[in-house]
Length: 127
Ligand SMILES: [Cu+2]
Image (cartoon, rainbow, N blue to C red; front, side):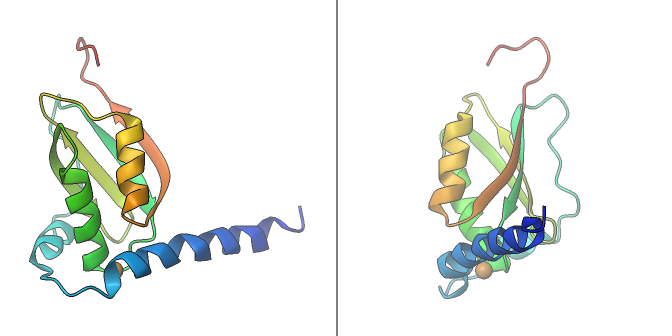
């Protein structure tokens, strides 16, 4: 168990770097990310299908904007809320539902690390 802590730090460091590369050096308006970041605790609408994710690697509002764009471009994604401080990302689905693989790919393609994902389906509705 002696190696546990250094290994954790290594993983954490690697998790931060892709986000910096993906988002922090590009020039774009931060208005969208500002709005998302100041929105308080992200939450699904009552009865809505969606996914809650914990994403590592977002270091600034540009990172959040990049991830938001990537997720919003998926079929069936209606709303994306990102809490930059906690890395918590809430994706609300509309009539179509993206798959978990779609969501994982969108996060990875944006240069971030998906740490945790939970899909929510409203009761009585099949996938
Ligand atoms: Cu950034």
